[in-house]
Length: 137
Image (cartoon, rainbow, N blue to C red; front, side):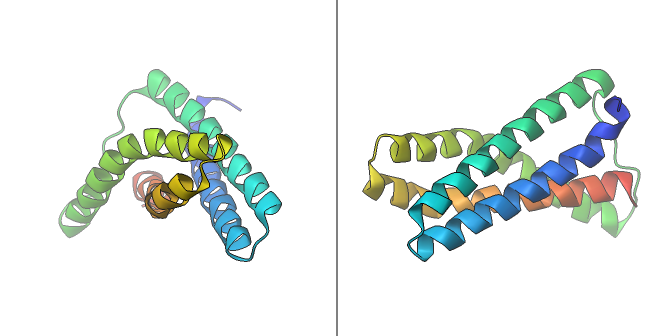
């Protein structure tokens, strides 16, 4: 494996993160707190692996330009803009959410998790969409 394989790996890691976080929320809504913790920590680990891989790739390659034109370019740029802004927001938000759970401040954890989860899912899914648009169109 070399750095050219990393965009595909990143899409897989983003997908896995979204699935694991979704499974975690599913579990906690059904009262399975232990499974929730396991899934959410796995999602956190997968996201950390993604971020590491993403940074390594872009350190090697730099910025990758979208080659599409016309309406698809506008769609891509709209997705990329919201993805980028929320990707910057989600890192401290996830860390704060995990910290509150770790400190057993569950009321505060629940309040912030209501925001963290949908943003995390959006960033993960749009990360895969950006990958598909950049490398598969």
